[in-house]
Image 1 (cartoon, chains in turn cyan, yellow):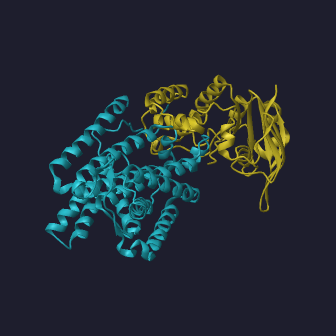
Image 2 (cartoon, chains in turn brown, orange):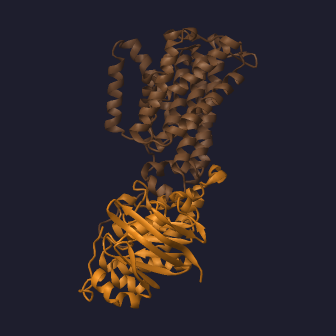
Length: 320
Length: 258
């Protein structure tokens, strides 16, 4: 397993470089890649929660918090510096998750899913009713720069490079968390919470921390989406957005840390092609993809193994 | 010898049933105690109260002189009380080695230590040592959910001992184990606990095992301690033979209480 550790960082660096080169050589696709990666960040957090067997149906809450806090800072306070624009959503999302997590970390299964959904729809309701924030139309975000370097509009490629670097950092962080004593608890919580408690470890505390980490990832994804798409609207907090994250997470599976981004990018590409070549049948295409994934790859892209898992089967009656 | 656990006047009622009716038990450090009793005598309730799964209605439990009533199972575990379960509580989708690696990482997850990176190799080394102690090497890479019951019992106890407990409670370690394997399973468990210097209390229905492995036997009946003493005294006691063992004591009991 040691070689896995040694190959991880080079693979992550390679993937980041590949994305930057791909984005540079395909300028017309920068928009699609941006959305894919932004959603991939939210999905990465969701996949982290799914390791513990918890499905959040409300990551749109933090996606919207990210997008709107960037938008409000740009439009109300004329702050255009990307560093500030990214720190604020992280703080706001972490604070929100720290409060919501106190309640949510006590719930499991469908109750957890429904509560997260309820919280995100609360924000959706607020945003739709707020005329000052553009109501259902949302508003535009223009002129974001990083130390004077423009990131959006015609300079979207610059912003995309920043997004790739953020995704790289996120992958490293989640990978690191998965190797810590706390992160290693997640699959055990899914399997047998009683035993986790009787080992002296706290399932709720681990879930609480993972939820905050997932919220930060979704908020950063939402902020970058706001900067690069140059527009935010309440749809970001709508259940369909959260549902799309869940669909991508199911496609990605929990077995691998890169697949959330691969699945998110793949889905964005398929959607774009489907819109171009077969408008009005996008839902049909999506349905066929999901159905075939469930039939042929029930553990998602992350379930594809290049080596066989090292397990042996036991014959009945065998002795120790 | 000083007591590691002192349970004083424990009372626990479930509606009309009294599962513990003024139970007073001291467990001496470094000893192996057997706990016998009919179904419903309050044996598992006693273990559940000490490990924090159930709170007693009244009474006190001291661990090394400190009150532990009111603490959660997690806090009690951290203070050095471990247990195995009548139905083994394993991570059924993981292999034996992964189960133990998980146990080692979980015991390191407390406080700021929880954020330090644990290397897979180091965890695997510890886990392999433990598998060897319990003679589970052959099952290293089998999925826990598919293993025979005796092996699952051993793995459950191996996991319970990972946190270096001071006292270990075993709830029917040989139930569901094939009768010809019972002694070898018990030998492994008792050897491992002796090496680790852990005090043990085990619930058991097989009187041969109780007589052979315990330094002292507690007999529970209807929520009370009927008699408490060395195995030969307790097992030959008239009341115990009548109420708990039954008249056919000489016939080896094939007990399958799940």
